[in-house]
Amino acid sequence: MKRNQNSKKSKNPLVGIDRAQILWLNTHDFLPAKPVPGAACQRLSADDIERLSRIKDFDIDEQLVSDFNALGFTAFGMFVEKKLAGISFFAAGELPARYNKRGDNFAGLDIVIPPGTRCLFKAVVLPQYRGNRLHSAVVRYAIDEFGKDTVHTIIATCAATNKAFLASSLDQGFEKVGQSAEFRILTKSFYRLPKPIDSVNGEVTTDEDRSILLRKAA
Image (tube, rainbow, N blue to C red; front, top):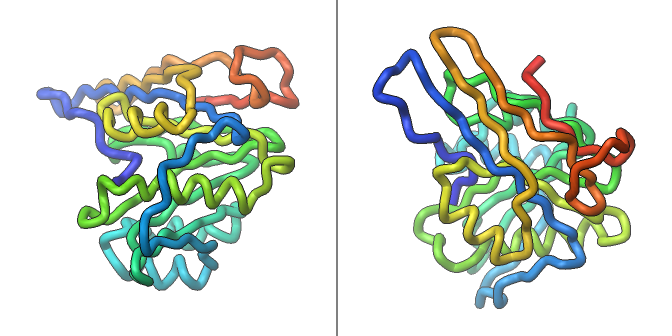
């Protein structure tokens, strides 16, 4: 399962809309799926990411390889019978817009991530392993690795057209806390931005220290 699937293309290539749902999770409320027989998770290193970039199945480009250490990303792999079946990436601090868009024509949205929060910005499960709730297992492993006392919140954005990821995430305890949209007309982008979200309770906030903020690409 690939989280960032392209939005439905407009019949007019000069006009497009990228709609996304913002999802919020209290790590204490996560509801993992039943364990998958023969499956195991582990943290992946920068060297692992560089090697995986040579495998097209995981859609890891040179930019992501470069940013992995520079921006402090964390990645976890899901293995089934010792074969890598999926991978998930998490960010802290700030996530550049290039990791929060669908389609090359869109600019995306920067995400400001407060302390105690991680953003799940990329998740891939290889086709032959889909339908086994492996993504749920990776999220549970990530929560355990981060520690609930250290990371109390996980957020993600989901393309409006990605019904499967949305349904799976809601089943696991994620909540819908906002929506965003980028309207692309010719070469210009116009945005509908959500209000700042409190990282602790998922509600609208004015507390900048706890604010999850989506803003126009720099």
